[in-house]
Image 1 (cartoon, one colour):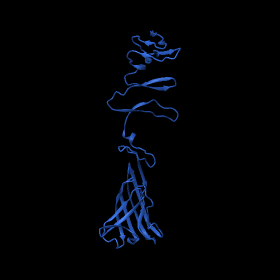
Image 2 (image 1 turned 120 degrees about the horizontal axis):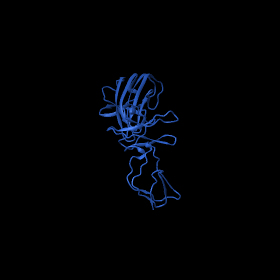
Image 3 (image 1 turned 60 degrees about the horizontal axis):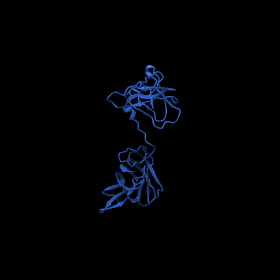
Image 4 (image 1 turned 180 degrees about the vertical axis):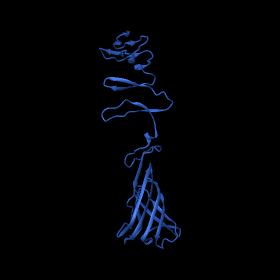
Length: 259
């Protein structure tokens, strides 16, 4: 059955299978014309409106309708500039102002905030973490012990960007204590990568003569929060021990590692 719309009331009673085939349907709320009302006394399974829809709600191409008040629909004019813009709204905690077109400015992306500690995304093109922090108490152990170790001062800082941590810290001793064995520094703020080892830049002053002029290396193992220090002896890498350290040794470390 063909339905002819009443041009005065714009009321359209429909039954299942009806097709609207009238020429031009106009409903312009901006000029006071009522919207079309389509209703049916029974469920309508198939409804088609043949023709071209133009100027919905009286707007232009690209206009966006929004709820401007209770039971009131208004339009935002389309963005007709050659610049990409986005819609912004400002609320007061209970109600929002009307949305407006805004250009993306530096201030809008000035302070990106990531979840605490960040997360490792499987997408290699995703920046998923940014953290700044301090390394306030880097510690030294000899053979796993720290008996009698006294620090004159120690401090440091780190920044994590994605899967890389960059750090710098120092440890200045006033007593190396009585523990003996291999030297280990516990200072990494985030555990290292499960499969990638790293080397940091190392400087040590006021050390024992046992170090001599050998090349020194600071090494980070996989899945570690500690750093081991090595020297070269007759072409072999040997881990530093308490015998290489004095009561006034200054250790400075800096560099980056993967997490």
